[in-house]
Each structure stands twice: as structure tokens, then as C-alpha cells.
Image (tube, rainbow, N blue to C red; front, side, top):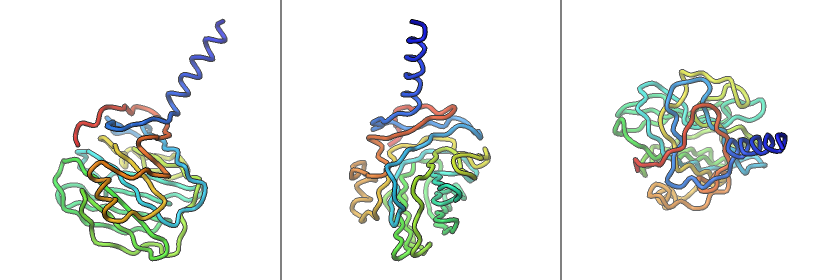
Length: 226
């Protein structure tokens, strides 16, 4: 009987740590600076990416630079990294593909919630960033490249290895919600739909059916700032 109870406890813990959940109207809260607290996202992705669109909402009052989305492949760090280089009214965002980087300039209120969409097309190399439904100046990045499959995707920390080697000075503190990722470049009207809260079903990561694993002090709370 004791062994059965132990197995029930273990199984319950595993299901809580590694879950597929509809997180509509919810957000991951990262309450403190650390080198440990993070969320692993488990995508539906078995082939290299030629195109993608990534959209999510974030709310932070950090005055330093910090990671937003970290995607590493085996033996390849910064395979896909979205990073906020500078905060404030004149913000800078960097997008890394295959360790190559472009920087986008944005004017925004601070601190305030922000909706971010990043997209990239291998055939043209065109990278786009939309902030709160407004497109920033397009950039050229890694034309002809393929983003490796079978990644480790982390929220809250920037990976310097495959799924680890975190630095608290790069960590995210705040809230993240409404995260979706597609294997295509969405047209403007669909990006605006995501901004207004009615995104298309996503085939890599979908906030309404998300596989994830919480590590450390990360709490799920209602998303009340949209």
C-alpha cells in the first residue's frame, strides 16, 4: 500500500511538472532574478525550420537587458534568441538566428505590457519584428539558413549550452503569456489578429495546448494586464 501511494505521489508530481495545458488568460510569473528559475517549452518540431513566426505578451519593469525567448539546438547555442538589449522608451531588441544577430529599434511606453511578434523567412533572409501591432524596419538575417530541429526552448533564462548554463544577469523577471509559434511567416492581418487576442492555431507552440515543464520559482497566475 505504501509503495502504491509513493507511485501515485511520483506520478502526480511528474504530471504537474510536465504538462499540456490550456493557459488561455494565464501567464507565467517569474518573480525574482535568478540563475535557476525557468520554464522549458516542449514544441511539436522534428524538422529544421525554414520559416517561423513567434508571438507573445510580456510585462516587466527590468531596467537591464534580459532574455525573452531562448531556443538552442544540440551543440548550437543562440540558434534562435530574442533578447531585449535596452529598456525604456527607446528600446532595442536583438534577434539571433544561427549566432548571427540583427537589432531593432522601438519606441514604447515603459514600464508597460508589450505584445511582440518576430518572424523570419529563410528564402529571403527577411526578419521582422512587430511591437504592439506595429511593424519595425525589416532586417536581413541568415538568408538560406535552416534553424535546427529538436531544440531546447527556455523562458526566463538565456541558454549558453543545450538547456542550461544560465546567468542571472540575463534572466527575465516579470510575466509572459499568450505565446504562439508557427512554422510559417504570418501575413500582417494574422499578426494583428494575434495582437488583438485571436491568433490562428499554432503548430509549434500553442498557448491553448502547451507542453511545458516548470523549474524553480515560476508561478502561473491570471493574465490581468491585457
